[in-house]
Amino acid sequence: MNSPRAGGSPGTGLLRRRACLAGLAAALGPWGAQASAGGVSEREIVLGQIIALTGPLSGMTQDIANAAQAWFDGVNRQGGIHGRAVRLVTLDDGYVPANSVKAVQKMVSEVQAFALLNMTGTGNVTAVQPLLDKAGLPLFGPITGAGNLRTATDTGAAIFHLRASYADEIEKIVAHLHTLSQQRIAMVYLDNGFGQDGLASMRNALARRGMQLHAQASLRPDASDVDAAVQVLHDSRPDALVLVTTGKATLEFVKRYNAVGRGMRFYALSVMGSQATVQALGPDGVGMVVTSVVPLPWSKSVVAAQEYRAAMQRSGFANLSFVGFEAFLNAKAVTEGLRRAGRELTVARFVQALESMGKVDLGGFEISFAKGSREGSRFVELTYIGRDGRFMR
Image (cartoon, rainbow, N blue to C red; front, side, top):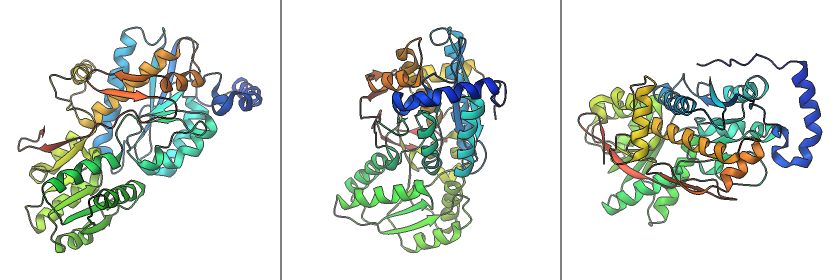
């Protein structure tokens, strides 16, 4: 975990400055609290990243941290953004919403981050929304596709999404299964906000086709109840099994299910698209279908994928993954927004720059934002894990 390198707790002068700024907040709208652009100095822009480097998502989150750092390393080598270097401060919340709240408080009071990016977890982002609102702290590219976080308003926390929603991913899976005439579609989902969002999306996607969920089981993030979930679903004899799970829960469920009886076709969402997860699954992962919300990171034709691989190599990071590529694209899009906001950087200017961005090609991956529209992409495709452990199309 990277620790803040900027002077520790705010001193008396900073507290006085905040007290003076408080009177301006109402006149300046929802971003008034940061109208002076905290986290911005003559030489640097401080960005924050709150991710689960420990806990059940630890197998994928290091890819996020490395990829974002690799992009900003490259930005800084080329002179930064309008002459300012980008300093990325990462805090670990262990995938625990209460820890996420503490981390945001630290980002505001100690780190003084200008904006956040790449935050992981539906429940985690939901928990910090009130704090983001109060602090006027934008969040770009959370690694979640939850629908409840995607309602753009002119007030409240400014959350900009690069990835497609979980509803988009599940729609792609259900459409594929419907084409194959699969009727007995079952689902296992985490017993948290991520899983509940996926369950609602699954029911809606099936209902649009006159279908119902064949069987379902919830699963704790630590997989402590995995045997019960496996038993319920295996006994229902499904044609296909959709997993709205992450990290340890995915690993334990697939391995335990295959131990009871092999041959099931598993469908998983993009959040499990890390090479660490594939390696941990080993032979149990072969044939699993996984949605992707970004192009193949190993593509030779997608310019951004080439940039990602080169940046990771230059920064000394060996592991490539979908979720790493997503974090890389998030960092690239944030950089574009900061550049468009200009040298006189404030949060209001940054938000306005993003909302007026329109369609932007990040190198073979297009995003588009507008006033009232903070969902950058609805790109989803299906991949599968081959026998050599690679993701294939």
